[in-house]
Amino acid sequence: MSTLDATTVGEVVARARFDAQGLLPAVVQQHDTREVLMLGYMNAEALRRTLTEGRVTYWSRSRQEYWRKGDTSGHIQLVRGAALDCDGDTLLLQVEQVGPACHTGAHACFDVDPLEPVLGETE
Image (cartoon, rainbow, N blue to C red; front, side, top):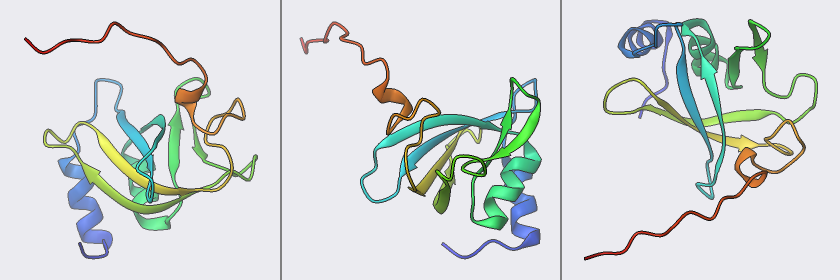
């Protein structure tokens, strides 16, 4: 994988398939353990900023503004890798998480409400 420049970032943004609200879900994973930390949303500009600045920027659906993870909490996400899925409609971000990822203070957003589903069996 080579470092993205202005041209190649533009090509990645053009390949991404944003939903009707102009958003792309981003699954965030700790780069070294592969643990899933959270899910955020990006519009085209947030994706461009994330791919060129080395820190993760999201689009806040509730506040309708950009937010760079950690600017107020100090719990930053440093980009270590990124990939669009096969359909181009979901982004996987590998990050170095500094501090908790969840706004509740939990390590990961999925630590907050674990479920116990019925397990499927092979036939």
